[in-house]
Image (cartoon, rainbow over all chains, first blue to last red; front, side, top):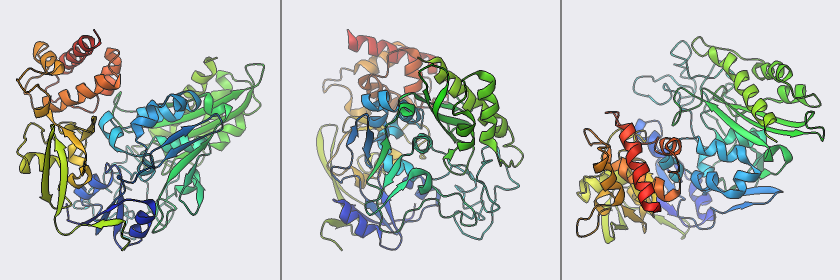
Length: 327
Length: 166
């Protein structure tokens, strides 16, 4: 790991000032930044440690909304009783992510800044071409081993999968990220690669995530996160789904439904076509399975990741049907 | 630079409590807690496995919570309290309940992952995530054992959790 200057910020204001320095990177839990610095992917000139800032780790939940401080640990949010009862998909996405140790380190704000696990991105020595690392250098993944790569939101520049779980639940429930001067929908905070694969987030130099806000809803209260992966635990998603469901008084007609997918796209992927196809319909297996196929509209595979086009809709349907069975 | 920011020179001084005793050391900013523990403080019970946050061999407690020392910068634990495997037994050598359970259940073969397994297990029980074998497996998933001693590790965690509840 290349050496760097180290600054410890004691306030958000100090962090914002320091974050505007050339080559500066913010350090919260360190689970992405320290890892990528060891891989030679991140080479910060200055690391700004924000983990000692007081007052940024509160978790405030009402039926109206959840406001989660940027420095709240993933483990604490996952185990929070109000999050579990009012936003179960958020808790489930968190406790199925990473390991207990990593969840004790990683923060909610840092989690939104998690980078892809694309093995070509993570290996600059062997694979110099990577548009995310070096814009214009090409993509080593296209034509390479693509089993884990995205089928949705890809471009000719990049097919790297967004690896996280939490943000998938956040986009399903219209959460916002608080950057101080501005608030953005989480869905808009994440950028598909297009021709600028190096830009993964709509965040500017000097901006610091201070909180995320999740509006409460009936669909958020009746929600779940299902994650299918190569191992039972401690693995990134092959495909995952965050689903929220609200039924009419008859107990079978869908009033509101939220559908988002992970593990299959270049960013947390909201599937509105599935939602639109199901709103107002009776919840039955055939209808749900047919509508779930719409999650893969526009999907493009690169060989070994073809299975995700079949797997994604099945995970969506399984999650919707599971929610339908719960009273 | 804003006066609320502390700027490091080439090396910086870190003050921490380690297994109940105060320490300070001068380190480069890039030094991980794992390397500081092993190479500077000569506590080699905390193991370096993958050094990439994937195996759990370097698990220690920071302010009572289990974390990976290989992905923690030593500079970050300024003012924090660290517990390593060396700090788990009593002063008189009486083993922690979890250590004793690992011995009784023969929960290791080569032993390299064991300090990390035990530090993780102590926290897993304290968090209330050792209620069933299924829950133990899920919440111990961040500690890999290449020998495959998992059934005995689960048995040891189950036994220790039961003893701590009674």
